[in-house]
Length: 443
Image (cartoon, rainbow, N blue to C red; front, side, top):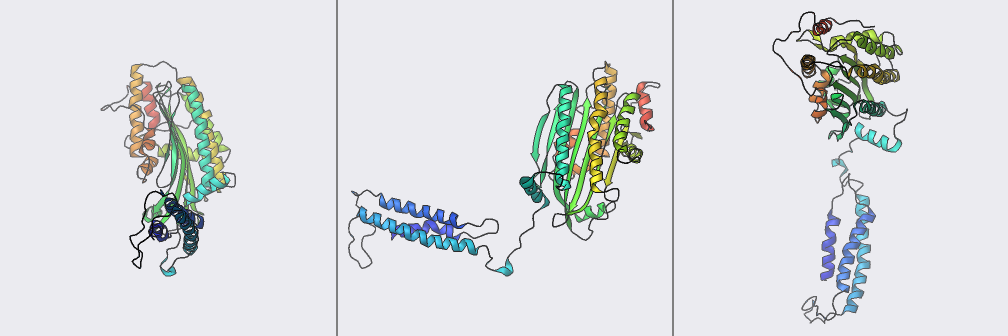
């Protein structure tokens, strides 16, 4: 009876394990565990040393003395035990596995939660990859990652140094790829980031967003959201080479079934020089205008004005740089989703031809210590805008689970603040400031 008792003791935890909706033991799994328990007990009986006296008990249930241990009888008993136990425990395991699919008390059972959009997207990528018929979430993610690789490859050829690449996951859903080159040959600091964010918008945030997006449901307590974007800032060593910024993004809220509730695109690019070269400003703006004109002749003037207004260091009364384009909240009231996605793609692809020719002309120009000092002062203005006025930085810093290092990647490695600093009258520095106080139409 001791062997049988040991068997039941070892198998009991398996049979008592409660069934859950997330981990239901299968018949084969349960039987496998039970057989291992029984086989182990049987082998211990069958391999007992025959020379060693082994009494299972002093007397039987009638008080009669028991005989000495007989290994042949023990082997027969062990195999009978194995056969009986397998059938018995297997039957119970099968009953447990099948019955656990139905709750014992239907009135108190919890309904299964529907999959999140993050889970839906992960499954879609795993099963089908990303194609032209995939959701906009997956297509935007694929596009920005492709652009990130192309931009980094071009910048590495120019600098001769490699980017540090950090791939990170966001606990709440999504993640990103942060690529930073620091103290290189051409760039003091360069960052090209992509980020994918899944989360939930609380009711107050939904109410604020409804000012620009009436499709948002005002009666729900929360909405799942998705955001994807590519963000880049390049700070060259040479003060004659301008800083440049780029950001293109897509935002979507989802219904309970995963379908889009509201969506919009945003983004832009702008040039921030320390010393003004008119030909550089004209080339930069003309390249961007060509990308805009291919979709709508009204885009460039409209988004250029928006850029001059947005990238304004208001407490200084001047623009951050020479501008470019900026737009936000482009949704179905503007154009259909496919047309807007195509527009964003062309704008992003226009970056390399708009900036690389400028960089190649300026990166090796001679400069003085005074000109380097002016670059540091202008970078201080850049920092002020990013930390005080930029909505993207503010959104990132206030998003739970955000990666702070990636958000602050845009800040230069060095900057300077001088008390009551003003450029000399008639200097190149003064000319730049005068243009920043009153934006120019470059094309």
